[in-house]
Every structure is written in C-alpha cells, then in structure tokens.
View 1 (cartoon, rainbow, N blue to C red):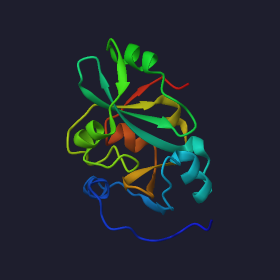
View 2 (view 1 turned 30 degrees about the vertical axis):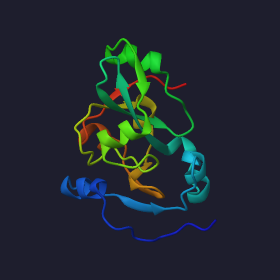
View 3 (view 1 turned 30 degrees about the horizontal axis):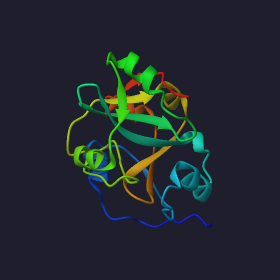
View 4 (view 1 turned 90 degrees about the vertical axis):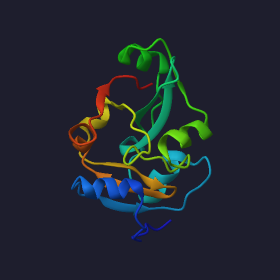
Length: 162
C-alpha cells in the first residue's frame, strides 16, 4: 500500500506535542482491527522495532501505568513489576484503559492522557534514532525523537522486553 501524506485533525496527543514544542511528523495508514504494529509498519515501510506501542497496565493496587514497548516485542509483566517495585502488573481491560487514557484502544497515545499516569519505556527504544508512536487516533502515528519520551514526557527507562 502506498504511504499516505494526509494531515489528520488535532488530537489531545498532538495538542500536547505542540504545547510542549515537540517537533513531529504525521504518518497515516489504514487501520486494521488487531493488525497492531505489524500492520502499521508494513503499510508505512518502517521497521516494526521502531514502531512503539502504548500499553495501559495496572499494578497490584489497581494503579494505572503506561509502558512503551517496541512493536516487535512483548512486555514481561513479571520483569516490569520487579523493575517498578510492584508485586504484579497486568494489562487493563480495554474499557478501563480507555477510561484512564481517554483514548480508544488501538489509538492510545502516551501524550495528552486524561489521567496522569507514570510512564515507563523499554530501554532499547531510547537507543533508536527515530520512532513512530500513536498520535491519539487509530491509523495515525507521529514520528518523534525517542529522547522526547524521557526529556519531555518524563518516562523512566526499564528493561522488560521479551
């Protein structure tokens, strides 16, 4: 499929990026249910390793958190829990994740969430030159420098990839 260079209307994520003076590029693709990062990377011609997924999880006290992970990796919830000092971590149910983030599952961005949540990022993501991450809508990714995650979003690095 051809890459689309179409502008998308503003989202809470792009508003957040603009208000924090973060330069970004827009990357639009045809959203496919359950296609995930494999589908977006294929359509956009990006390595899946550099397409970062935003996952809303909760700890053993039901406190929500965000983990940012390489598209081609999984999160070891055991390693994540150990790294953040929790007894356990599990993915939130889609409706709970939506309530915390304000975003529809498949369009979850770590930027501009309605609830402030701690953000963790897989350490390897920070070593990449550039990443694509959800821009707050299904079928819409933004390209940013990964340092934005730690410098502006204040995400803390963690090692929990499988």
